[in-house]
Amino acid sequence: MAGCNHMMLVNFTVALDCIAWARLVFQTTTHYTRLKSLQNL
Image (tube, rainbow, N blue to C red; front, side, top):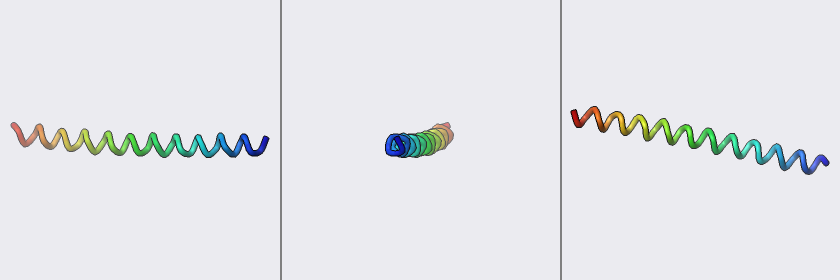
């Protein structure tokens, strides 16, 4: 049972890392797109 819980914990940590990474990428692209649109004005 401890092994199962450990695997769930690892999966949960990986999922959090993915979410944090996706959020970072999203913020970066949004910021970059905003800068680009401002330059085009």
